[in-house]
Picture 1: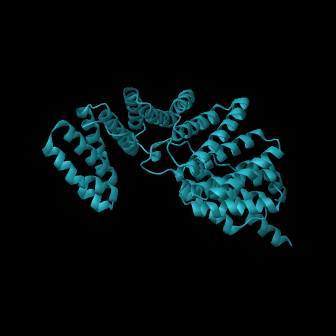
Picture 2: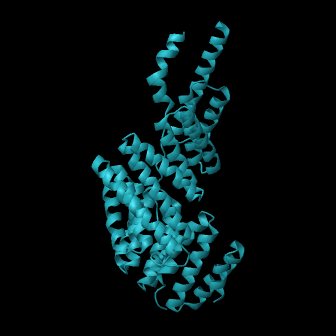
Length: 356
Length: 43
């Protein structure tokens, strides 16, 4: 009996130590190492089912951050089964929320909706307003992703198939319901996130003025928190909305702020995207010299990042801009480069455009 | 040449989404609340 007790204590202590180290590693963003510790903790085992639930949940989240969504789904499922078995309602709500988010990323929208509904129902039963708001935000994200998945590429926002528009309208309803709660709770960070995604939903619905209103709110809150990544996202989204409002100068100003922030944050991929957007905006303004300047900047970063698709787009845009300026030698040079890259990347539409 | 139509320069993938909010369960919190006393007692 005593030996068994000692063994049990050692097992619990060792499992806990491993789990605590996994938790510490995930907190500092080392998810890969965190996963190893959590998996080792499971190997050792624990009889405490609350601890096991916390390990499953964190493993699911770690895999989610590592973009291994099938593994994330597996662990959030284990957590859901466990919390249901032990009758832990709050734990079940959380597991449902996490599983819903994971299923959304995997494109399994109908299954995700079931999880979001469970998260919402439990939160309401428990009079948990924070949980209710979070479930509504997740719901909005699922319908947004569903709507976006049906959107045809090459079609402007607001002109998508009816099925996509229905999903997007539902997303905006969930975001509005979330907003009324998080405003009541005075949770500014949550309001910021919701305004951002609500703005994106209005954008896809073709309600560009409403999109601007939401993104302006998102920007304000990002500044309150000194959250420069969120600020950068808001400027980029505002730029996109102003393009569709035909206010190209205003769009350019917003993309310039995006570019500044991308440089401050040392995010080369976003810097490239901002240069590309600026190149396109100056093309719309028929200021081809500036357009070329930004497209060349985009081209250099795309080459640095070994992004052949980005490079192809830059070449195509440069070909157009040089054609507009009557510089046929450069136009042909970039058109040929674009064709060569399109063939290599198997970009059929790019190849067809190049031939035209 | 005239301005490039908007549909050729922007598509739905260009929008920047806010991050998902994942629910968290912490061993640290649980351990400090419920387990410390039990384990110390077992010694």
